[in-house]
Image 1 (cartoon, helix red, strand yellow):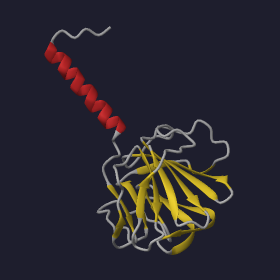
Image 2 (image 1 turned 135 degrees about the vertical axis):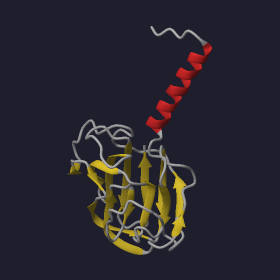
Image 3 (image 1 turned 90 degrees about the vertical axis):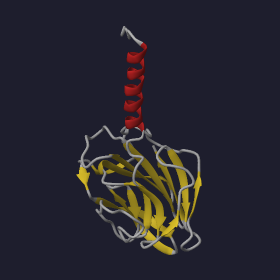
Length: 207
């Protein structure tokens, strides 16, 4: 048992604990968060990330709607996958300023253009048409690629997976770190993005 001998010491302990948990739970809250057509912002999120889920709908060109939805994680929202059964792993080492192209197996539409793949950036943005490792000065035009920034910053990923939830539904899972390197199996950034065949929307669940 720890004995705290004075009120001042007690308050100091509370302050230190509060700082520790704030750093642990919201370490990746900073960064750029918006929907972009590659040159300008076309949509904003109705509430802050992380720890929220949203549907990004670009059925109206250059006017994205982002609405809150219920969380729907297949894996843990705050830890590495406990079982990889059914998943295909495409990233298994720590990587900085990188991206992975994920073939969806179908066409999905983003801002009026049809795509059959999505690019998962280590710096916590999803782009369409091409990928990017840009990490500095991130904005609606940097990288100049259509997509979604989700607390985008100079982050890194250690694991990336994808799986077909059902016919025409592809789920991609990102496990990363709010720094330029991290330890496999110890993420402090986790999200799952769900893409739908023939639709102009996709879902983002961010832990």
